[in-house]
Length: 96
Image 1 (tube, rainbow, N blue to C red):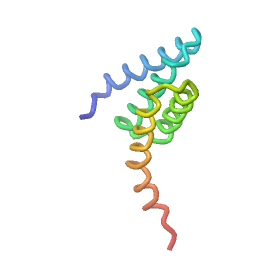
Image 2: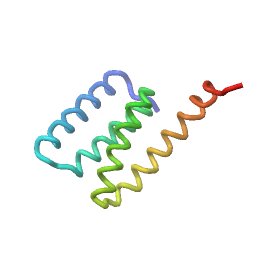
Image 3: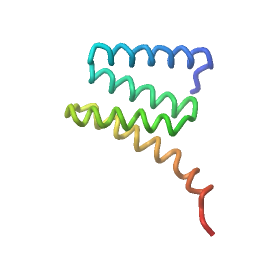
């Protein structure tokens, strides 16, 4: 189910505030979680796949470095976004 545009913009603003705050206080774990949630939202609701993949990969890298069990969840989300987006990209870029 898609969120309405106002809710989406509010969510993005809150995630950006969270990223700024976690960066300032050095809360790496929550920074990674916020990046993952923001990435998933951008992929699923706005179709900004490239930015979403960037955020998700950053989150995964941090969580793996921290040896967090949440890394597995983010890895699955990253795989899903790649799987859902690349068949379309691949189809358009086929060589004859």
